Length: 490
Image 1 (cartoon, one colour):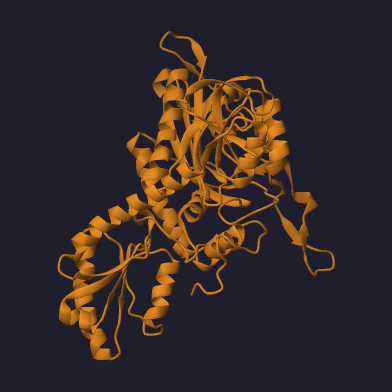
Image 2: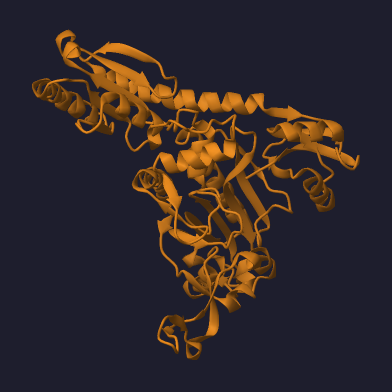
């Protein structure tokens, strides 16, 4: 199945594109820049959704839904926000089509022009804060802790499946608070949830930190992020949590009556992750044989493949597999028994290896006689013969071992590809090689933009609890008190 598959060394970008499509995760649609997420890919996204949704609800958040269409005038109310998204906005100008005069086609009905143009949601701060104005009158109405699962549209010129598409799926949280301290606490809490999910579910180690002023979200006071390192040495911003201050409350006149009977502006946060996480999952773990999925997010954790020649052998194997499958499912392990007679076992082995199924079991007539079964791990490709008796307990333990092993492997890769540099020449050399480059920066946007212009590297994050040390900016030579994380990024 994986024949003619480009390797990472040959062309990493092509390897990724081929893997996403050939593993049935997604494909390009008829609409330029948009994708069709196929059932196998969507099953992974559903597992991501379910895990995060529980995390959100466990911390007091509720789900709601807000409109896809946003009045254009809303974007004029928060200047930095509109400036940040203006180039990516898709605009609805008419609400009806009609037949062309020659009757051979369809044209826009100019008599159906909207009084006010509508923006297809690139993010929902504006429409949500217009709504919150109606919901909030008193301190008794706070906090508001809302999340929505939705699609958004950002008109991208260069697209790549999952990593950057014109339309994508995400969740966006929007919360309202009495005080600045509460809002900052919420912002950091959600950052921790994202890091927890990335590391303990995706098996992807992340750096938590603050975005530089140049890189922060349009309309935020502070943007916090989790940054992951992909196998080609590029960084991937995997989630963001924003402290919005009172910017949107002032823009939409959202005030509350305090306990002291004073009218105060509300404090706000927003936070989100998207189907970009699917791209991170693929790029952080997969190899030249296909996908490698962490057990917690694998749609199929165990696949069982029968090896037989005669129909009666299949019947005997199937009877035994029913018991094995039931025992595994009692341990909350997802199992697929592939007894299709249209494909040979070797083809099936290749298929499930390519799709990243964590554990493959193979069983034939001789195994039935010996009470044994062959087990193959996707992460290490190791095979062994084990007793059928108690195999469900072995696999339960092994799935955790695979999950942990994948995280440790990714963490080791990041550690081996994180470098400290002190000079501009060292910086340019390391940035070309790839990885996280820790370097001193003078704290000015001017220097940050010059570095980006000359090397295409950006400040990915200023790590939380960053060690303070005296140094000189690698570009300007001006004094600096800490190193920040630079990398080329997706």
